[in-house]
Amino acid sequence: MEQVIVIGAGIAGLAAAHALNAAGYPVRVLEARSRIGGRIWTDLRYGPVEFGAEFIHGHRAATWELVRRADLPVSRWGRDRRFAIGGQILTPDHPISAAVLTLYQQVCEYRGPEVTVATLLDRLAPSSAARMLVGRWLANLEGADLSRLSAVALARERRLSTTGQDNFHIDSGYLQLLTPLSAGLVIETCSVVTHIRWDERQAEVTLADSRRLRARHLVITVPVSLLQAGQPLFDPPLPAAKQAALAAIPMGNVTKLALWFNRQFWPDFTVLSTDGTIATWWPVTSARVPTLMGYMGGQQALTVAGLGEAEAIAVALRELSALFGIDATAYYCDGQLIDWSRDPWSRGAYTYSAAETLAARVALAEPVGPLHFAGEATVTGAEIATVHGAFESGRRAAREIVLAAEP
Image (cartoon, rainbow, N blue to C red; front, side):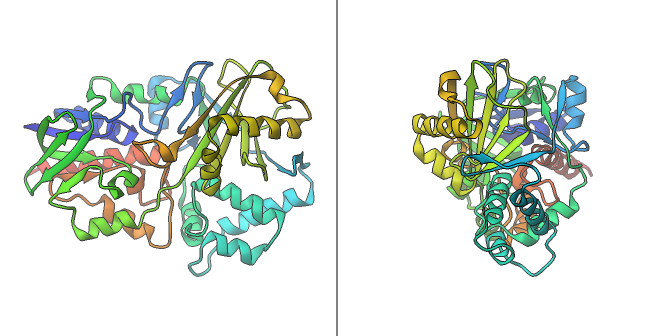
């Protein structure tokens, strides 16, 4: 019998396994993918480009511990955001630009009764360009359906956050953050857990290759979207309160579009929000060749993913040509569409908060017998849907196991 099995080698699973290993617990990590990292995925063909998690959010995020341990080079991302309507980039002092920033701040500082962000935006700025751009901005950040996203929860998370406002980019790739966590661990990739049998004393996992492994403790870091779909199956089923919690946590959608070029044809900028098919653009400065990242969250993520890679790239090049007044196709080298909602081991990007989600996160994080739950969906503070939140949730699950063993 194993002492501890961790399902999932994303940062939550690795953080749990690393902490338990350091405390003297033998740990086996089972990962369905052929790689570690989960929703951290760095592509290196033209230099580091993030297909998954992109930034460290705030100068006090817990993951700085790993950055410093691995001595990773980091760049601060600018705070300036430009806007474009109808293929025309607005000046920073344009009335629409100012209206967008004001409206965004109003939503993030909301203190009224429960209401969705979609409804709040309609009340504050019906049928305006600012309403559309702010809606896309928030859908991108949260990966959310704005008709479910809670304005109360959104504002609460903004108020409670203590990590800082700046974003940072790991120049050598987010994947490097995993090196100090994974060192010395027993990790089995391509190991798909299909069933979990459990009682109060132990758990047994069945893998797709028919192996069965038993453990005194099981740390489950599977995304909620998979758990909602019955992957893996639990026998007996999880308690009703746990199932209700899973059902109340929505998974957001994100699609990314990485485009590589043989020359930079755009002026320097940090981020550009548009009303086009590709909702947001930013330059990827860590790549070796000029690179732009297109980013879509919420419904627009599904719309772009539905185009397919070839058509999404063609649309993106047309929109870039209009934005920057040059034939972007002439400089295009390569591109890739990353559709997290169709990824079989995530079925989405990260969770967001509907009206009932905070209580659900608390309930999901509670251990049940030998079962312990970690991952960004179990974070109950301000750091939901972040890498550093997932990192801390893994360490929290490890502490639960250590404390359970104490007399």
